[in-house]
Amino acid sequence: MHLFSRSWTALRTAVAELPDESFERPSGCTGWLVRDLVCHLIIDAQDVLITLATPADGEPTVNAVTYWNVLDQPPTGEDPLDALTVRLAAAYEEPRLLKFHLDDVGSAAGRAAELADLDLRVGTRDEVLTVGDYLAAYVMEWTLHHLDLIAHLPGVTGPPAEGLARSRAMLEEIAGVPFPASFTDEDALLVGTGRRAPSETEKAALGELATRVPFVLG
Image 1 (spheres, rainbow, N blue to C red):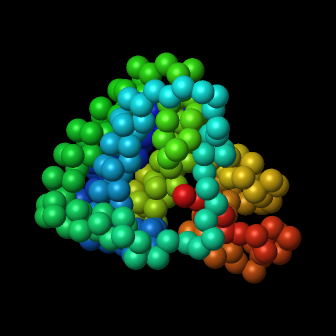
Image 2: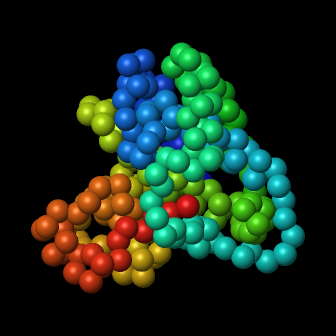
């Protein structure tokens, strides 16, 4: 819960402090500008509110790690939902409106998470998991998208170190092996999820794992 709140607050704060011109810069998500990414974060916040208000019966079917699906191909930005996000982002017209909506819905999602019973079971994506596991999974979501936000914005503060470390640990569980100790947490996440290609030195350090990256999470 602490990591969810800290990661989410840090990401929203970074967006709130962006100058208007930053919203027209590319993000780390293929085909998306920063404004498109921010619009996606609003949709994410809505998903958090919906899921926390969707109690489920039965035993959990996934946890914080198995919640993530490993996809065959990285996103191209051409998926219908991705394209819809771009159109929605453009409809805001002014960055201040995106900032306002993210602060409004994002703050509500943060408060709902703080008030939620971590042992309660909720349903999302046709799966059942505890609130605690759901919020833990979203540490990865916030951390990766924080890296996407700052990808082409030098000087903007990145995600909290503990969120990076926890996200790396979850990615390593997904991979089934650790990333080399020579990789920083940020590099492990960027290379491991296909947000950038490994250098020749990094490929050598990855060994057999180099043939398995990236792990495209969805």
